[in-house]
Image (cartoon, rainbow, N blue to C red; front, side, top):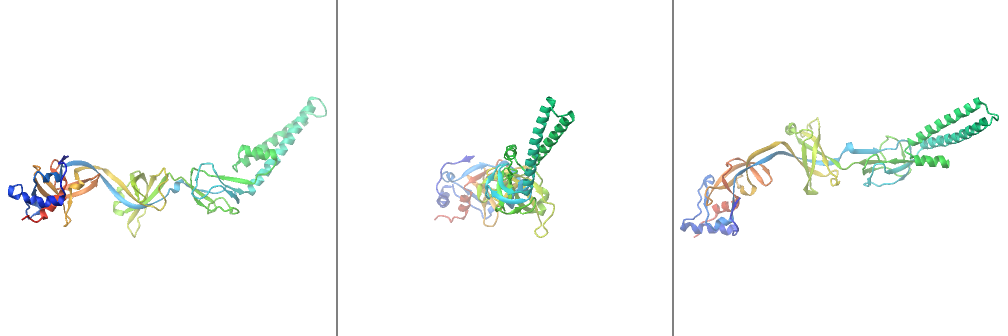
Amino acid sequence: MIAAAGGPCLSACGRASNAYAPEGVASTASTSAKEAAVELSPSQLHSIKMEPVGTYPFAVEKAAVGSIDFDDDLSVQVFPPYQGKILKTFVELGDEVQKGQALYTIHSPDLIQAESALIGAAAALDLTNKELARAKDLYSANVGVSQRELEQATSDQQTAEGAFKAARDAVRVFGKTDAEIAQIVASRKIDPALVVRSPITGRMTSMNAPPGLLVQPGTPPAPYSVADLSIKWMLANVAESDSPLYRIGQPVKVRVMAYAERIFEGKISKIYASVDPNTHTVTIRSEITDPTNALRPGMLANFVIRIQDPVEGTAIPEASVVHEGDGTTTVWVTTDHHRFQQRTVKIGLEMDGRYQVLSGLQPGEIVVAEGGVFLSNMLQAPPSD
């Protein structure tokens, strides 16, 4: 960058420029903006900065407005595996839960029946174990037990053992642990509470589980819903004419008003097949990474997506562009760092504090990077007496 250090205020410089006219370092301006020129004195040069026109890889992007939502693919409705009445709940709406954590318990007739069968099978197994042990002792002593009776006792014990294992597995299906099953067998007491656990790690997003409510598998509403909130959806509507530019897997950058300076990264996960006949837009769904759970469903969001490789283009600083009252854009160009020519340019993409120049400038030319408005104001300043 070519720059002059320091500088007086712009308005004062604009008036002072004509004071140099008698000495030949005057500001002059033609009637045509295309040919307008200004000459600056050495002291006035301190008010501007100059920079050569360069090139920059401008990203070709599209923007759209949408809203944040839960990722339905990562949201689970937690129904009980069997019918029953809710006994107790352990978490509240909005709580974070871990996979396997107890959410609620139900009083399940099916569980009671299974545990009753287990207790009966355990008693039958104990009995046949004792009978087999007695038969073996008597048979060894040749006291009143035949080979056939020993074989029958052995068969009865094996049958009882198989029935016990089947009953134990039936109770295990209800989510009872081996320790809990062992306690039921040892105490011969039924535990009617069926614990329903979270199938995933996430956050409670809905709750319809008052104690006493009769719940059934798959019958809505689910007592609880748990969602993995590390991934969110953004649903946005894009113009029908732009829809061919989007592809599944394209990276997106998302901003929300609550975190204006933060960019959330994601990618397009679905392009809906239908077009809204009223708005002629297509819905695009993106998966947004949100490890801190900052995004909330319903938030208004803007996404920017790069639709093609960057375009290398002629580039100038944003501050060098003067937006004129008639809608045109101009810059100030110099070849000798002393006399400045106003030139109309056409600008395109904007990125990282730079404008893409579509016409009016070539790389290598020297433009006023800061202070272009000062020069434009000098054209309008009345001559000094």
